[in-house]
Length: 272
Image (tube, rainbow, N blue to C red; front, side, top):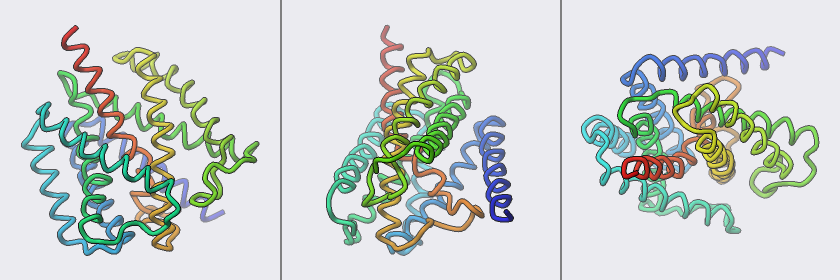
C-alpha cells in the first residue's frame, strides 16, 4: 500500500512539473528538458558502462550549441534529425537480432549515446518552435498520447493479453496490449484535436500512430539495454518509477520520427 502511494505521488509530481514548466515559458521548458537530458545521459552511461564526464560535456555542448545558439535553422536541424534516425534504425535492427549484448567498443557507445539520447532531446526542445511561434501545447499533446498509449496497453494487456509481443526482451508485453494501446491512442488523438485545434484531426491521428508504434519500440529497446546491464530500472530518482530514462524512453525514441513528420508538414504548408 505504501509503495502504491509513493508511486502515485511521485508520478503526479512528475506530471505537474512537466506540464507547468512546459506551459509557463519557453525558457522553463528548455531548462527542464535540458536537466532531464543530463540525468538521462548519466543513467544511460551507467547502463552501458561508460564514464560520465565526457558524455555530460557532450550533452551540455549540444544543448548550448543546438538549442540556444542555433535557433531553428532548417538545414542544421534536418542533419541532426537524419543522424538521430540513422541511430534509431540501427537500434531497431539490433533489437530484432539474437544478440542480447550491445556493441561494446567505445566508439559505438558514443554514437548510440549521441543518436539515442542527446539528439532526440535536442529535437524535442525544437518541436514547439517549428512553426512561427513557440507552441508548448504540441509537447503537452505528445505526452498525453504517450500516457494514453502506455495506460491502455497495460490495461488491455492485463485484461485479455495472451500472445506475447516480444517475450525475449519484455515478457509482460502482449500483442493485444500493443493493439489496444494503439486503438485508444487513435481515439485520444481525435478527442485531442477538438481542444488543440492548431492541428487537424488527421495530423493528431498520425501523431498518435507514430507515438504509439515507435514509443513501444523505444520501450523495448530500453528494456534490452537494461536486460544487458542486469538491472530493473535505469535509475532511482523517481520513487516507484525508476529513472528519468524509464519515464521518457518511449517519447525520446519516437521524437526523431515525429520531428521529421512535423518538418514535412511545415514545409508543405510553407510552399502551398
